[in-house]
Amino acid sequence: MRRAASPPPQLPGYRYVSLLGAGGFSDVFLYEQELPRRRVAVKVLLAEEMTAASRAAFVAEANLMAQLSNHPYIVTIYHAAVAGDGRPYFAMEYCSGPSLADRYKQAPLSVVEALRTGVRLSSAIVVAHQAGILHRDIKPANVLSNDYGWPALTDFGISSTVDDELTASTTTLAEALDGATDGGTGNVGLSVPWSPPEMFEDYPRPDVRSDVFSLAATLWTVLAGQTPFEVRGRPNGTLDLIGRIERGAITPMARDDVPRSLLTVLQKGMSTDPDRRFATAADFARALQRVELELGYARTELEVPNLAIAAPAPDHSDVTGDETRVRSVATIDAQAGPAAAVPPAEPDASSGADETHVRTVPRVAAQSADATPLDETVVRRVTPVTDASTAASETADTADEVPSRQRTALMVALGVAGVLVIGGVVAGIALGGGLTPEGSTSASPAPGGTGQAAVVPEAVDAPRLVGEPSFDTAGMTFLVENTDPVEGDQLVWRISNRSSGEPLRTLDGDTVVVEGVGPADGVCVEVSVRRAGQLSAPLEVCAA
Ligand SMILES: Nc1ncnc2c1ncn2[C@@H]1O[C@H](COP(=O)(O)OP(=O)(O)OP(=O)(O)O)[C@@H](O)[C@H]1O
Image (cartoon, rainbow, N blue to C red; front, side, top):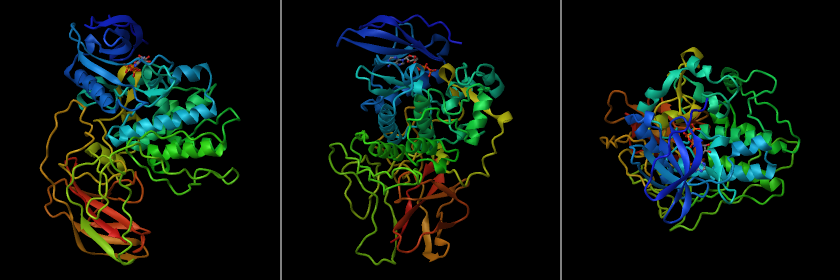
């Protein structure tokens, strides 16, 4: 149940106009800024939520949004301060149009608009992921629209959640259910309809694919006019929804103008198994673009500044045989930037096909997608990886560590205004780059807007290769050694040059086996030591 709004604070330089909405921890008001004169939305933390943790989370939300604010499809933050009554607030772009939730409840979106919106939102998500930020609460209500009708992603309140805040707002599932028995309109379960199944684990490990799921579920919702796991005429309480989400029981779309290819893309985006989803939001966007081309619509550009994303090989995996084959999408142009972005490492044509290249990647600063020379030494972007994020990437091989879904033990954290949050710290992410050298500085700040103090850890030595890689029917095999082991260390690896979004796997032992890889496949593997959430510089082993 929505509470009464708090009184709007007196803000020097701003004149209060009206209430825009009341959230769980904050109110949002419309003000008129005097200079420059414009309308702004001001989000104010509630007086009763002024714990250190809530304040930190609030500041973190402002910082995360500010970090992404230049993006055309992310709400712009203008200013943050503390009001005279002691409440922190931030002023942001006023989005005068309806949210996607308002829209779809009025009438489902047309296919062309859903596609365009999907690509635009994907670009916002790509940029967030590139900066190491998972949104974690993508849903129609968090997609506002501005004066031009463009979508504007907002509400990074969950993204910035820190441990303390979760502690402060954690309750049991039973308590949560009290407020969420009506299929997504309850006080607590508002985000359940768009949440991926991994969020219902005892120890959720969301990663970029979790945001892909929520994005696909959001598009499904605006097309269907209802959430994807809701069944009209049947109970749609939180447990009903969670059960269907875990089973992947998407309710068939009750309209016949949505092409099968689009349904297939959205279904793939909502796969129960994260490995079966699109690996990145960019991949998801490309699939939507292919549908646009298939239908003869103009392709919506993916607005990802200064980042060239190589065109995928034509991907027909998400279309079925009885439909029009889609054309592959050309390379998404980089915005004007200082230099070309760094393509994935190519096998060196000058070297023998059977040669195996082994090199330790030097410690480098994280690089934005610009100005990186294509030389032999450093050829990949590096993005921040936190312990939570790296764990998040380990979908396959951490099953032993993660108890199976035990709903009775499931603890549910209540986020702002009924958002269901399950999980711990802000999840940073690894996206399309190499493993992050521990201690490297980052062009894109790590998800440091969490309100947590930055810690500069001790350097962790890269592992070393023992002997030479060998190849047999199993694939490529090689041995690595943690040269300076500390209790709790783990070796982690992933293929580094195949596509963005390759999962990071924990090595059980010291032998890396890359299945199905032959000596001439040009596959590179990076191996790092993970210690207390930090990764060493990677050892890179390439079959080229
Ligand atoms: N920039 C904005 N322009 C216009 N309206 C806004 C803006 N930001 C938020 N609102 C409105 O204010 C209300 C609350 O905003 P928001 O969702 O960010 O708060 P919250 O406390 O995080 O809520 P929730 O618990 O739903 O996440 C919503 O109805 C939203 O539509």
